[in-house]
Image (cartoon, rainbow, N blue to C red; front, side, top):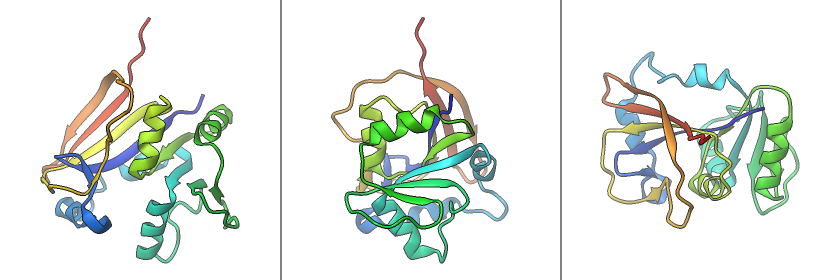
Length: 177
């Protein structure tokens, strides 16, 4: 069965964006030739789920949607026409994820944002979390994890430290027998 995997970067104090959707803190760890395993990860997925605000932010920065080669579901409350492989999905998130997990193929990439991540956590739908921690404290902004979700036990798959100071933590949902 396909897995739903969150792959995201956060500040050490748990923010995925500073106020006004400012992601400039991410540039502090950019190094030529270093993608922190992103290309290898993206090769393992054929489907992307992201929130509309994240999609709009990305589209304001680049001329073409970076996941246009994959089945992409942009979670939104407003109906919009499909663009190539990109569907603007207004239905139930849990129903979508359960359907996608049953399909053949590679895994599913959750590319944010915080509202989507927290809804997936509330429903217990994330199978793995790959979180890149940027060595900075931004103080405030958009928190990766919000209050009000159930406790979830995770198992560490790996932890990697990079020369830039970024640490990448890979967890999977704990399985109890």
